[in-house]
Amino acid sequence: MTHTTTTIGIDVSKQYLDACCHHDQQTLRVPNHLKGMTALLAWIGQRQARPLIVIEPTGGYEHPLQAILLDQGFSLAKVNARQVREFARAKGRLAKTDAIDAAVLADYGHVMSPRTMVGPSHEQSELAQLVKRRRQLVELATIKKNRLEKAPDDLATQSIQRLLRVLKEEIQEMDARMATLMKRHQSLAHAHDVVKPIKGLGPLTVATLLAELPELGRIGNKQISSLVGVAPHNIDSGMRRGTRHIRGGRIQIRCALYMAVLSAIQHDPGMKQFYQHLVERGKKPKKVALVAVMRKMLVRLNAKMREYYLQVDSSAWQPQEG
Image 1 (cartoon, one colour):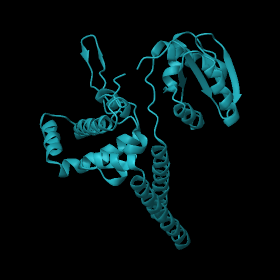
Image 2: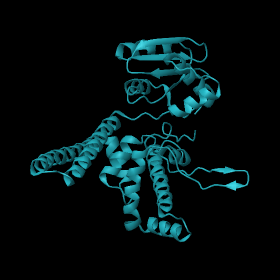
Image 3: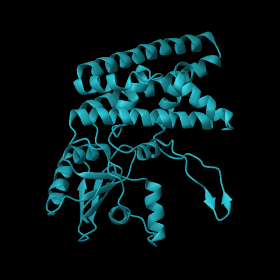
Image 4: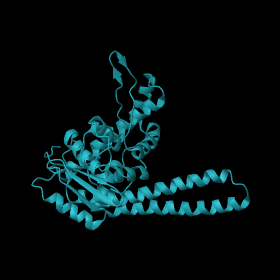
């Protein structure tokens, strides 16, 4: 995707939003609440061309701003904080303040041209909240089950068991709400019908993919493989040829695909044959072969969703390779 040369970096903290425009070096600080964001949007709107806006993850404080910018149709890139810091060091900018961080983000966006985000729909955002809450409940239930094994007395055992019953009910409630939501919204129902025939995908995996991977079907196969973290990267230097490794990516999507692949290599003849072929070729450990099957499943999902989007609106859903 091509952008104008105007790039704005926004450093997000709990209390403030610090912005810097790379083109004219103008800066702005506003409170991190709705009125402040409105003022920030007005400041951004003063520019003739719609800029590329660059932010970095800050533990969730960026989510309200991110939602507003995407809803307004801005080109928004959320970049890795470690990479931005390394970029700043490479340019000799060792000092760190909110204003400096905003300027570094603007410079990074101008030089690196990072990939812009694909904004989730309102129903995808709603589904993502349910998926996230269910995951939190499962993690909490796992902690309680581990404590139950080491409970010192009957009082502790009974207390933990009561909590586990409540957590089980809450998890079932989240499952029911997710199922209802995907049936109620036509776009989610259609997307569900597109990906569900692929063997190995259970209701939770489908919900996770639709909620937390809005890029599915909208970017190229190589890009989505890298985004999820199932694309191997070379580690070569001179005559040395190192072992390729996967790194980064969206771990929750990767975990969901991993569980789906374990089922697929048992029930999908094509996936089973592909996996066995890799193992016979010496893909050891076997997890390397499983990652290759995960990538194959992801590419298949991406292709199916791309076809669906092209049928819905061929002009609006052209896949992006950038």
